Amino acid sequence: MSNSLLVAPLGRGIQITLNEPKGVSDADALELTNLLLAAHERASYVVLRSSHDDFILGRNNPRPAPGAPQQDALDRRRSSEVIFNCYGSFRACTVPIIGVVGGRAVGLGCSISALCDITIASDKATFQINEMNHHILPTMVMSSLVDRVARKDLAYLVLSRETVSAERAQAMHIVSRVVPAAQLDATVAELVATFEATSTAAMQGVKEYVGAAYDMPIKGAVDFARNVHAVINSAPEIRAEPPR
Image (cartoon, rainbow, N blue to C red; front, side):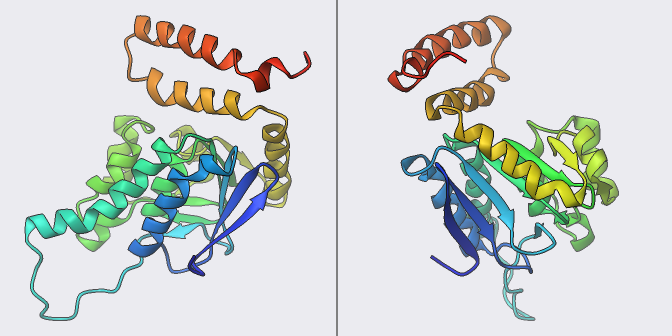
Protein backbone atom coordinates (compact mmCIF):
# COMPACT_ATOMS: atom_id res chain seq x y z
CA MET A 1 0.00 0.00 0.00
CA SER A 2 1.45 3.37 -1.02
CA ASN A 3 1.33 6.57 1.00
CA SER A 4 -0.71 8.17 -1.79
CA LEU A 5 -3.82 6.16 -0.84
CA LEU A 6 -4.65 5.65 2.81
CA VAL A 7 -7.22 2.95 3.64
CA ALA A 8 -8.93 2.72 7.03
CA PRO A 9 -11.98 0.89 8.38
CA LEU A 10 -15.08 3.03 8.85
CA GLY A 11 -17.83 1.08 10.61
CA ARG A 12 -18.95 -1.59 8.12
CA GLY A 13 -17.26 0.33 5.33
CA ILE A 14 -13.82 1.59 4.41
CA GLN A 15 -12.50 5.08 3.86
CA ILE A 16 -9.99 5.67 1.08
CA THR A 17 -8.12 8.93 1.49
CA LEU A 18 -6.24 10.43 -1.43
CA ASN A 19 -3.03 11.70 0.09
CA GLU A 20 -1.19 13.23 -2.90
CA PRO A 21 -1.93 16.93 -3.46
CA LYS A 22 -0.41 17.00 -6.96
CA GLY A 23 -2.91 14.53 -8.41
CA VAL A 24 -3.35 10.84 -9.12
CA SER A 25 -0.51 8.94 -10.78
CA ASP A 26 -1.06 5.88 -12.95
CA ALA A 27 0.24 3.74 -10.08
CA ASP A 28 -2.32 5.37 -7.75
CA ALA A 29 -5.08 4.78 -10.31
CA LEU A 30 -4.16 1.09 -10.53
CA GLU A 31 -4.15 0.78 -6.74
CA LEU A 32 -7.52 2.53 -6.50
CA THR A 33 -8.94 0.24 -9.18
CA ASN A 34 -7.89 -2.86 -7.26
CA LEU A 35 -9.26 -1.48 -3.99
CA LEU A 36 -12.67 -0.75 -5.50
CA LEU A 37 -12.97 -4.07 -7.33
CA ALA A 38 -12.26 -5.93 -4.08
CA ALA A 39 -14.15 -3.58 -1.74
CA HIS A 40 -17.13 -5.94 -1.36
CA GLU A 41 -14.87 -8.53 0.28
CA ARG A 42 -14.48 -6.38 3.39
CA ALA A 43 -16.88 -3.44 3.21
CA SER A 44 -20.53 -2.54 2.72
CA TYR A 45 -19.66 0.88 1.30
CA VAL A 46 -16.69 3.10 0.46
CA VAL A 47 -16.03 6.72 1.39
CA LEU A 48 -13.54 8.41 -0.95
CA ARG A 49 -12.06 11.74 0.05
CA SER A 50 -8.84 13.77 0.08
CA SER A 51 -6.56 14.60 2.99
CA HIS A 52 -5.95 18.03 1.41
CA ASP A 53 -8.12 21.07 0.77
CA ASP A 54 -8.50 20.08 -2.89
CA PHE A 55 -9.97 16.78 -4.09
CA ILE A 56 -7.92 15.77 -7.16
CA LEU A 57 -5.98 18.12 -9.42
CA GLY A 58 -5.80 15.85 -12.42
CA ARG A 59 -3.42 13.12 -13.49
CA ASN A 60 0.11 13.31 -12.05
CA ASN A 61 2.72 11.48 -14.12
CA PRO A 62 6.29 12.46 -15.03
CA ARG A 63 6.46 14.38 -18.30
CA PRO A 64 8.43 12.79 -21.14
CA ALA A 65 11.98 14.06 -21.44
CA PRO A 66 12.57 16.64 -24.18
CA GLY A 67 13.23 14.88 -27.46
CA ALA A 68 11.77 11.58 -26.27
CA PRO A 69 10.21 9.57 -29.13
CA GLN A 70 6.47 9.97 -29.58
CA GLN A 71 4.30 6.99 -28.66
CA ASP A 72 2.57 5.26 -31.52
CA ALA A 73 -1.19 4.83 -31.39
CA LEU A 74 -1.09 1.35 -29.85
CA ASP A 75 1.36 2.34 -27.11
CA ARG A 76 -0.71 5.43 -26.35
CA ARG A 77 -3.82 3.29 -26.08
CA ARG A 78 -2.07 0.90 -23.69
CA SER A 79 -0.87 3.76 -21.48
CA SER A 80 -4.42 5.10 -21.28
CA GLU A 81 -5.96 1.79 -20.21
CA VAL A 82 -5.06 2.30 -16.56
CA ILE A 83 -7.35 5.34 -16.38
CA PHE A 84 -10.15 3.81 -18.42
CA ASN A 85 -9.97 0.76 -16.13
CA CYS A 86 -10.02 3.01 -13.05
CA TYR A 87 -13.16 4.71 -14.32
CA GLY A 88 -14.66 1.29 -14.98
CA SER A 89 -13.94 0.14 -11.43
CA PHE A 90 -16.31 2.79 -10.03
CA ARG A 91 -19.11 1.27 -12.12
CA ALA A 92 -18.04 -2.32 -11.41
CA CYS A 93 -17.61 -1.87 -7.65
CA THR A 94 -20.60 -3.70 -6.17
CA VAL A 95 -20.91 -1.53 -3.04
CA PRO A 96 -21.88 2.17 -3.10
CA ILE A 97 -19.14 4.80 -3.17
CA ILE A 98 -19.56 8.14 -1.42
CA GLY A 99 -17.33 10.90 -2.79
CA VAL A 100 -16.46 13.87 -0.57
CA VAL A 101 -15.25 16.97 -2.42
CA GLY A 102 -14.06 19.93 -0.39
CA GLY A 103 -12.08 21.95 -2.93
CA ARG A 104 -10.95 21.84 -6.54
CA ALA A 105 -11.75 18.79 -8.70
CA VAL A 106 -9.90 19.15 -12.00
CA GLY A 107 -9.83 16.78 -14.99
CA LEU A 108 -9.62 13.30 -13.54
CA GLY A 109 -10.90 14.76 -10.27
CA CYS A 110 -14.07 15.96 -11.99
CA SER A 111 -14.51 12.51 -13.53
CA ILE A 112 -14.14 10.70 -10.23
CA SER A 113 -16.54 13.12 -8.54
CA ALA A 114 -19.18 12.18 -11.11
CA LEU A 115 -18.42 8.45 -11.01
CA CYS A 116 -19.04 8.11 -7.27
CA ASP A 117 -22.56 6.85 -6.59
CA ILE A 118 -23.22 9.76 -4.23
CA THR A 119 -21.06 12.88 -4.14
CA ILE A 120 -21.29 15.41 -1.33
CA ALA A 121 -19.54 18.69 -2.13
CA SER A 122 -18.67 21.75 -0.12
CA ASP A 123 -20.03 25.03 -1.40
CA LYS A 124 -16.36 25.99 -1.79
CA ALA A 125 -15.71 23.13 -4.26
CA THR A 126 -15.12 23.83 -7.94
CA PHE A 127 -15.02 21.59 -11.00
CA GLN A 128 -13.15 21.90 -14.28
CA ILE A 129 -12.18 19.82 -17.30
CA ASN A 130 -9.04 21.52 -18.56
CA GLU A 131 -7.46 18.91 -20.85
CA MET A 132 -7.77 21.11 -23.93
CA ASN A 133 -5.64 23.75 -22.21
CA HIS A 134 -2.86 21.16 -22.49
CA HIS A 135 -3.67 20.20 -26.10
CA ILE A 136 -5.19 16.88 -24.99
CA LEU A 137 -8.39 15.63 -26.58
CA PRO A 138 -10.62 15.05 -23.51
CA THR A 139 -12.47 11.92 -24.65
CA MET A 140 -11.00 9.96 -21.73
CA VAL A 141 -12.72 12.28 -19.25
CA MET A 142 -15.80 12.47 -21.47
CA SER A 143 -16.18 8.68 -21.34
CA SER A 144 -16.55 8.89 -17.55
CA LEU A 145 -19.28 11.52 -17.80
CA VAL A 146 -21.29 10.25 -20.78
CA ASP A 147 -23.85 8.44 -18.59
CA ARG A 148 -23.95 11.24 -16.00
CA VAL A 149 -23.91 14.61 -17.76
CA ALA A 150 -26.25 15.83 -20.50
CA ARG A 151 -24.63 16.29 -23.90
CA LYS A 152 -24.87 20.10 -23.99
CA ASP A 153 -23.38 20.36 -20.51
CA LEU A 154 -20.61 17.92 -21.42
CA ALA A 155 -19.73 19.80 -24.62
CA TYR A 156 -19.70 23.07 -22.71
CA LEU A 157 -17.47 21.75 -19.92
CA VAL A 158 -14.80 20.36 -22.23
CA LEU A 159 -14.84 23.13 -24.85
CA SER A 160 -15.15 26.15 -22.58
CA ARG A 161 -12.80 24.78 -19.89
CA GLU A 162 -14.78 26.93 -17.46
CA THR A 163 -14.40 26.34 -13.75
CA VAL A 164 -17.91 25.76 -12.42
CA SER A 165 -19.26 26.06 -8.91
CA ALA A 166 -20.51 23.18 -6.82
CA GLU A 167 -24.08 24.37 -7.37
CA ARG A 168 -23.60 24.32 -11.14
CA ALA A 169 -21.95 20.88 -10.90
CA GLN A 170 -25.01 19.66 -9.02
CA ALA A 171 -27.25 20.92 -11.82
CA MET A 172 -25.04 18.97 -14.24
CA HIS A 173 -25.38 15.78 -12.10
CA ILE A 174 -21.70 15.67 -11.20
CA VAL A 175 -22.63 16.27 -7.56
CA SER A 176 -25.51 14.89 -5.48
CA ARG A 177 -25.66 17.51 -2.74
CA VAL A 178 -23.94 20.78 -1.89
CA VAL A 179 -23.53 21.85 1.74
CA PRO A 180 -21.73 24.69 3.52
CA ALA A 181 -18.04 23.87 3.98
CA ALA A 182 -18.39 23.87 7.75
CA GLN A 183 -21.08 21.19 7.52
CA LEU A 184 -19.33 18.86 5.05
CA ASP A 185 -17.94 16.37 7.56
CA ALA A 186 -21.15 16.28 9.60
CA THR A 187 -23.23 15.69 6.46
CA VAL A 188 -21.00 12.80 5.40
CA ALA A 189 -21.15 11.34 8.91
CA GLU A 190 -24.95 11.49 8.81
CA LEU A 191 -25.01 9.66 5.47
CA VAL A 192 -22.57 7.05 6.78
CA ALA A 193 -24.83 6.51 9.79
CA THR A 194 -27.72 5.84 7.40
CA PHE A 195 -25.59 3.34 5.49
CA GLU A 196 -24.62 1.66 8.77
CA ALA A 197 -28.33 1.07 9.44
CA THR A 198 -28.94 -0.40 5.95
CA SER A 199 -28.28 -4.00 4.96
CA THR A 200 -25.38 -4.67 2.62
CA ALA A 201 -27.63 -6.67 0.30
CA ALA A 202 -30.05 -3.75 -0.05
CA MET A 203 -27.28 -1.27 -0.87
CA GLN A 204 -25.77 -3.65 -3.40
CA GLY A 205 -29.20 -4.18 -4.96
CA VAL A 206 -29.72 -0.44 -5.35
CA LYS A 207 -26.30 -0.04 -6.99
CA GLU A 208 -26.92 -2.98 -9.33
CA TYR A 209 -30.29 -1.61 -10.40
CA VAL A 210 -29.17 1.98 -10.89
CA GLY A 211 -26.12 0.79 -12.81
CA ALA A 212 -28.12 -1.23 -15.33
CA ALA A 213 -31.70 0.00 -15.54
CA TYR A 214 -31.02 3.31 -17.30
CA ASP A 215 -29.61 1.45 -20.30
CA MET A 216 -32.71 -0.75 -20.64
CA PRO A 217 -36.02 -0.25 -22.41
CA ILE A 218 -38.77 0.55 -19.91
CA LYS A 219 -40.20 -2.97 -19.95
CA GLY A 220 -36.76 -4.46 -19.36
CA ALA A 221 -36.10 -2.05 -16.50
CA VAL A 222 -39.41 -2.97 -14.85
CA ASP A 223 -38.80 -6.69 -15.29
CA PHE A 224 -35.28 -6.28 -13.89
CA ALA A 225 -36.80 -4.45 -10.89
CA ARG A 226 -39.12 -7.40 -10.30
CA ASN A 227 -36.16 -9.77 -10.30
CA VAL A 228 -33.90 -7.69 -8.06
CA HIS A 229 -36.81 -7.00 -5.70
CA ALA A 230 -37.53 -10.70 -5.26
CA VAL A 231 -33.90 -11.76 -4.91
CA ILE A 232 -32.67 -9.07 -2.54
CA ASN A 233 -35.76 -9.08 -0.32
CA SER A 234 -35.35 -12.82 0.20
CA ALA A 235 -31.84 -12.34 1.63
CA PRO A 236 -31.61 -13.63 5.22
CA GLU A 237 -30.09 -10.37 6.48
CA ILE A 238 -33.13 -8.43 5.27
CA ARG A 239 -35.71 -10.95 6.46
CA ALA A 240 -34.03 -10.96 9.88
CA GLU A 241 -34.34 -7.20 10.32
CA PRO A 242 -37.28 -5.98 12.43
CA PRO A 243 -39.91 -3.90 10.61
CA ARG A 244 -39.28 -0.15 10.70
